[in-house]
Image (tube, rainbow, N blue to C red; front, side, top):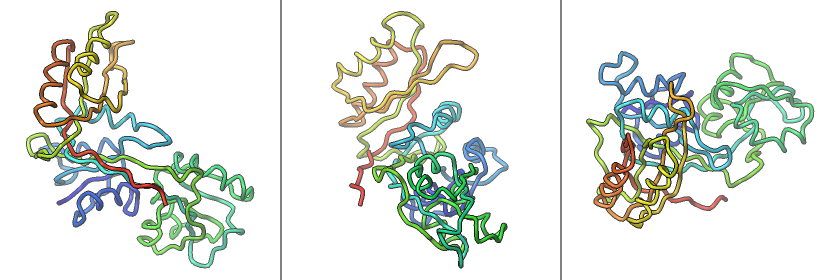
Amino acid sequence: MKIAIQGEPGSFSHEAALKLVPDAEIVPCALSAEVFAALAPSSGIANVDAAVIPIENSLAGSVLEHFDLLLEHDVKVTAETLLRIRHNLIARSGAATGEIDRVFSHPVALAQCRRFLAAHPRMEAFAFYDTAGSVKQLAELGDLHVAGIASQAAARHYGAVVLETDIEDNPENYTRFFLVRRAAEAEFDPDANKISVAFSVEHRPGSLAGALNELSALGTNLTKIESRPVHGKPWEYVFYVDCQIGSGDEGSRALAALGRHCGMVKELGRYREARQVAAG
């Protein structure tokens, strides 16, 4: 199976994709929009079977752009996984921690390693487009005073060395990833116990409460709600919800219940809920 990811080989998305589909062939894309475009039936970007995208981090919150792209494209979420995010200081062979003066990584990764960077005032942090990309550039720069913050997989992939392990401020750092397929090719897990839905309600008092009360009446457990603005309609919103369901029928009943209150309802996917393993 060919799986598109946003970012370079060795990134956390790469790691999550192999966790979901161990024998997958990874197709890196520069932008998230390219990942979804690659899933279009007429795409000339890459003939991929699926995509793996981060949707939420336990510390940084939701990846809002990906909610918009899920709604915009004719795709379905078929699985999810949780990945423990471990940040490492990585440099070229021969480098030493005390001699690093520039550190590159994705802005979220840098923010999650504030205490480590504060404890090493010589190190100046620079935002980069990708964690694995910050390690990839080490060979291009050829500078023993430059490091990146990324996964150990990135260090292995680019022949770099790990100077410091687990430098993140908070060990309870997880990212939730979705496996996304074309809607026409999506096969839902018969043991699915979770559903993701996007919906919009009328712009009047009580409309959102009415929609959520319908879910509550079914006994459906709402685990997440996120709002995103409707483009071209100021102060109107699309709501994204995740719900635990006891069966596929319960998911269908939830969609029907929402339909009675909502101008738009789109099922984003049904899948088995990923279980978190304690940090260690």
